[in-house]
Amino acid sequence: MSNLEHYRFIADLFDYPDALYPERACRSRDNIADCCPAAIPDVERFLDLLPADDLITMQELYTRTFDVQAITTLDLGYVLFGDDYKRGELLANLNREHQASHNDCGSELADHLPNVLRLMPLLEDDDLLLELVQEIVAPAVSDMTQEFSVDRVQKKYESYEKQYKTLIELPTDSSDVATLYQFLLRALYMILKSDFKITERIPLVASSDFLKSLTTENEIENRAEGFY
Image (cartoon, rainbow, N blue to C red; front, side, top):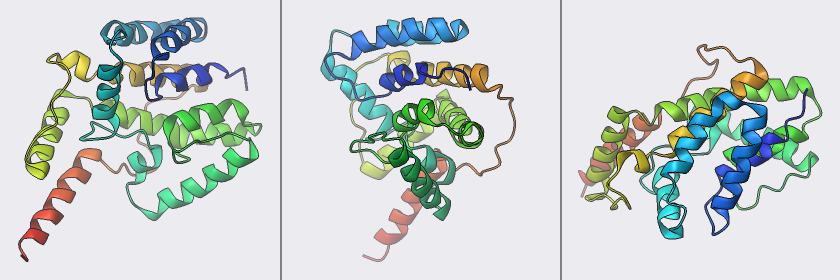
């Protein structure tokens, strides 16, 4: 397999922002320009929307996108399998590969997108790498990107408002800024397609459907409240 070091730089873009995040993001853009110029418009769009001079807002946008009252999650196994036992199998297999490759996952799980992206250049088994990308990474990133459609984002916000009785205030009034990570996910999918010749197809695994998961949680909570 050709050099995949650019995935280390791409992984940096999906880390929780710190004071040096804008600098790393620009460095990642330069690296992506060398490996996949077609992905640069989406990366540039992300950088244009990024409030690079406001660390708190960058962190709030990240948290609102991937953590608290999130649009999607960066945990690939959850995107594909939800809480199904198959995610447990995936985590066990990925943990083994991370350990064998001496890839430090920090405080995140083995299927966390940045951890998997950093693992990819370390894998020596090309067949395993191809299977990982085609069956896990690419389908999950595709599903994550779809979660940013206007209708789905609105339904998520409605679900959160019903569940928590209120929505955490967005740090911006701009819908483009509030969903800026969609452009990174689109760029990543384009790079994966370029490197691994991925074609659009129905994934072999069933998607957990992030929006459906939220709705189900609300229904369970409502039924539970009915007992009190």
